Length: 289
Length: 276
Image (tube, rainbow over all chains, first blue to last red; front, side, top):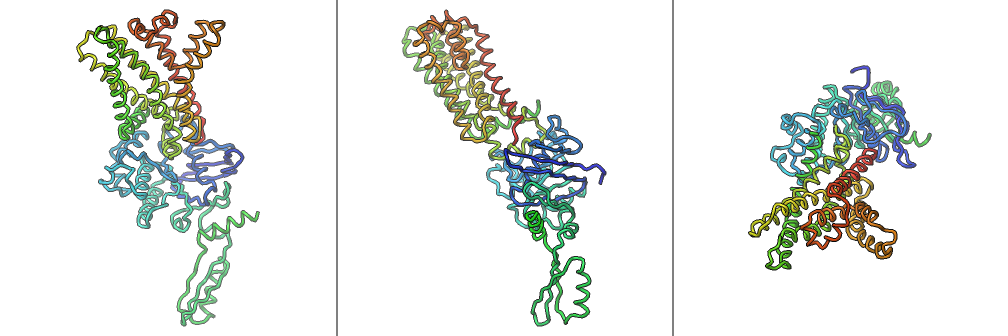
């Protein structure tokens, strides 16, 4: 990790007409970090990504990506190091998979020799590569989308809802690729509302709601902030299940007490609050404010 | 430059795949061949240059058909890609917005040029093979007609691009394209004629009329082809007009080129400010 963040978002707001899509967001992303941005539809995730890509310009505040302004006309050297997988990815249906990747490789001024390796990496069969994109299934399109995002070994990778419509096996291989990229020093920003599948993938979670950033931190930090109770599920020898809850800080003491002083048990299960529950909590807190 | 060519080549390949190129070329060739054979009928066996007759009928065909084809090809170019979501991905690549616009335009203009040259060229070949005597002057007029047709097509393609960058909805862009065609191709001349009749030659002098004609690319094209060559204007019934028109052929071509450049430049400026 370097000291200067690869992406720095400072006090950024974006207004469309009267409506704010993004409001006063501050965000730093470092190299080799995989950050998950969660929030429901219209929370400002995609708007924020578009701002970081330089597709739109902020109404207020400033954005630096790899040390430059992404919306600047002279930002093409920045964009060569950025990979992007858009939310509902669309390709030209009359082009084959290979022609599509060749086209994007030319635009990125990357050698096309690596394309075969890319197809193999994302798991697109050579037979599929020769077919027109119009005949592709959702999963194949998503693989092609990932392949184009990986062109030229990007330093920054934006993935907007990358796993919608993918089967579990594909999802696993998808996250494997993301992990290896992150380990190689790429900054990965992942957007999703499939919160449960992000657990264990992201180093940090950013919660967005109505254009604002409402929480930012590692899963453990967010747990501490949320102060959500940990549920302890006890299975008695008779098969009866008893559930109790305690604060996260009291977890160890409570477990010890149950083990030493409690009745005989068949099983103990500790259920940490899931990302879903924490997300709901942060939204409730936001609404209460 | 490379980026421009990459984008233009993609557009041409799209045109080939979705049969636009084939359909347009066949349509142009069929109409051109029909006109060159039927157009010779009124001249009977007298044996005067059939090329000139063909040029007159083909330029009239061009004025109606080519703007329509060009607008149909181009109105969707920008707004459609934004709508389908392919533009977001394209613009996240290291390409400038003007490169996207000009590159796509070059591709579409190449399709128009290909269809026109091949379609009208077929008529030229048919004429040459029919065995009648055709002088070099007539061939020059024929070549000028093909060249200016391509330019007219490019001008309306540029206007289609402007319509496409102007609005957020594909339907609206299509409506604007149809309106451009109706006004510039059909209504403008009628309005001009009405003006001349109503005015009775009191205030509208030759200079003003020339200016008004130049303000419409379709009329600039008509003037260029029907008055530019003496042999053609005899058949077009515009010999009298040709004597009146004080605008030289190079000015007419410059006006057509301006109708390509100006809408395209405006579209590029609008597109670069667009929030996708």
